[in-house]
Length: 171
Image 1 (cartoon, rainbow, N blue to C red):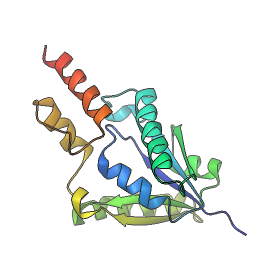
Image 2 (cartoon, helix red, strand yellow):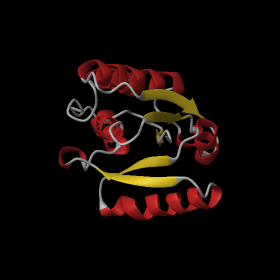
Image 3 (tube, rainbow, N blue to C red):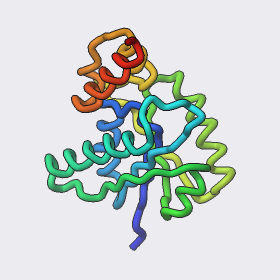
């Protein structure tokens, strides 16, 4: 029997409730789900790779405690090409979230490039849940930067860290 390994990649800077929703839903469509936290220093992340890994791992631990039937999620970091990481992990498909039609063009382009680099790697698109379809990490950072309430967009711990990060920036 084939083990279907799904890979959900991202920078998760910050990890949002939309990401968590995708993780929970994606865990039901594969035998093993690997959350690939990208180093991606080119995006100038707000949080370090180790902080982002910690945020994601804590939420995965919470999901697995909350839902006993979910025990197939691993969290790992990667750098370089996503297709190389997928090859190393034996992933058969990449999971990407679509929030709006505007996401599709970019995601379709990335899926096509990944397919060219690794022809046996599929991309599965999951649409964002209705309550999360507008949530983007960049939007959350913008709201937090100006002191807005982001508690409905991110886990409590992430919200606290963001408040500290931006209070240091604004001091």
